[in-house]
Length: 324
Picture (cartoon, rainbow, N blue to C red):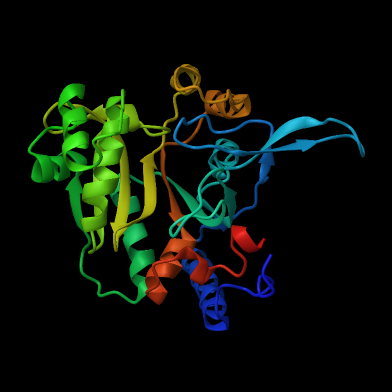
């Protein structure tokens, strides 16, 4: 431990800018009559997405007891959907989320997430609201933010359709353009590497990317696109080479949600990842009935990075992981 490790990594000006941003976010939703809610950070169930790793804690009945596993939430999504099923109406949450193994210039294992849900909104309407918030937060001009499909990005960069390109073609591209030593046996893993290494860093102006492969639906609905390909009804907002927000046309089918939990469990086993307890209360809430809605999660730390023009997340955190 160094003598100066007690000091914050963010300047006092950055801390003040975060305070201003939090106030702006709350005012934004208050003007739109969206209710602020709080849900548990620690839960018995977890998201099962193989791309995410929750941090596991234990709750015991007293000192020295082994306790039961609890998961620090990678997102408040499941609990917020339970509120939606209970009739909450439009809601948002501004608070902490946790992801294991994520640390670096753009990541901290504990980070601030803004998540909101809009019953009755289409995905396109939610994009407009995300754009309005980001323009206000960053003092951007009121010009429309560009929208481009996931397929169009891959066609432009690699001349292929990411929805149908054979695995061997994707593997060859990874070896030729990214890393000859990477041995990826899954199509989505190849697509993720190609996108994160060669496409996302070039997206400097704000852009909404939509119609992801159906295999990357996570908790979004799927539907045919204009070419008849089955796609995930979701979007990401990218700016300055950073993924800023991830939005879904939310899945409301309880049976399909249970099937995806089971599929995630099989994928995790195949990849050698530890099993996770699926959230059965979410399935129960969907069975009761989730209103048709669109929802989005936005990284507040990254939004503040863009606002302050910094490339390292430590510059906007009082105490990042290394100094916590």
